[in-house]
Length: 252
Figure 1: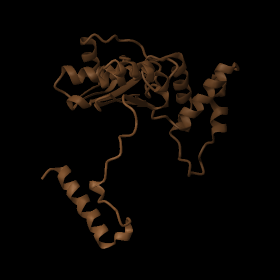
Figure 2 (figure 1 turned 180 degrees about the vertical axis):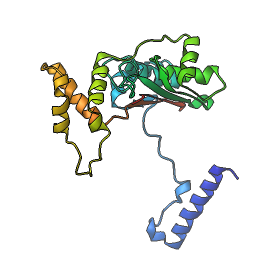
Figure 3 (figure 1 turned 135 degrees about the vertical axis):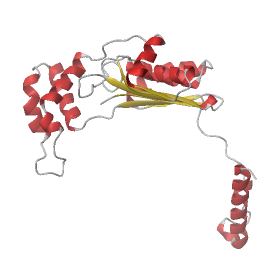
Figure 4 (figure 1 turned 180 degrees about the horizontal axis):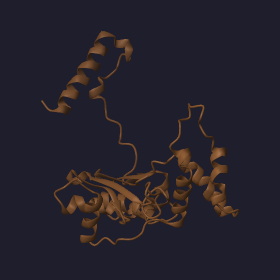
């Protein structure tokens, strides 16, 4: 007996038994749940969704879906826009660096139509790691490549190496380094907890007085006190119901 027929048998038996045992429960003309007409499917296809930092790029993926393109290509098109954006410090170019000041990236993808997956982790100097994860899926017999091996594979496959650290992220990293006592600190339940005001006062001399510098100072305080687990996931479903997904993140 298939999974569906078991479920149908169970639901029919359950609903039928309930009606037989108490006709007033559902009304005199009640119909067993499994035999009732199924409601029309809700929602629209194609559909594509992402975290907030990818919303402005969703049209890139939707254009691919509406043209009949692949769902994974659509999802990766969205996150690639964010990976390329130096003003977004959650992923890709300009991502917040690791303790050594190196931008270190992870990404994964799953392709629903073929039940395949690929991923990379701890990758340095390669910006578009979502595309790299897809390349691992398509061109290797592995599911994950990591570290320098992933970087070498990327170069062999034609990905360009570059310095991913922007001045924006470098300055936040320097503020973090200057406030190590704040970052490796007791938790919020400790009497020794340092407040945001104390941290701001501690690192303020590193920043100028311009509105841009003060905005950067506020971002540094936010990152140091509450380090982001900045990722961008994106999921796409086409008109046929095929689903694919990708996630890309910086190493912080």
